[in-house]
Length: 247
Image (cartoon, rainbow, N blue to C red):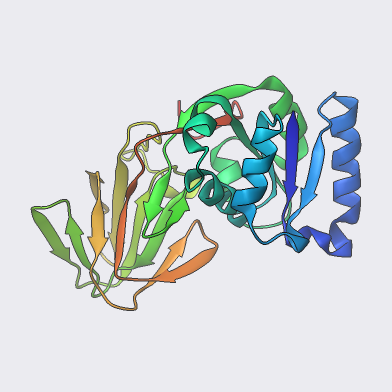
């Protein structure tokens, strides 16, 4: 059974035509299912748990980066996580802006329904930052950043620029030298400062030791440091597109 979870911002009138067209296409392809709108629902964890118990097999986030991250958080912190991790598929249908996760997964707005139908499945790492989760990356200003990498290495950056801690890269993150793998249980630390070449490290975990440092999660939500960043042990199953940014 397909369960479509619509983010609350999609209640705005400007999205009505897009959603009507989407629902017609899903029905035409035999992909109809239950639609749940988050506007009136606060506890996403209980919602997903209930849907799994009643037979949901594919959970589809309709929205943007923050939509899929809400669902991932509800899944990972759920008492049914072990079952979910083995038996349930995740997908995102991008609507509106801030959809770098869909881009990285190879899901195009005008082809999302066909991508869902094709059911290409990949197991993907989930990044964690304190009590939140991410798919793409965590970004922060480099000047003055105090990083603790693993248990034996620390780095304080004295130049202005940007730090990206990448799990699932998108086109803007990649260079010929850097290839990100969201299936290896590791994160890619990518530092670019003014007048210098990129610094690139593969890490299992790291800490941002600064207090009240602004961190951007998946180009959508901001949180403050100090922060511990890593990847959870178990991967989740995603339906992906053929033009994704990984093998």
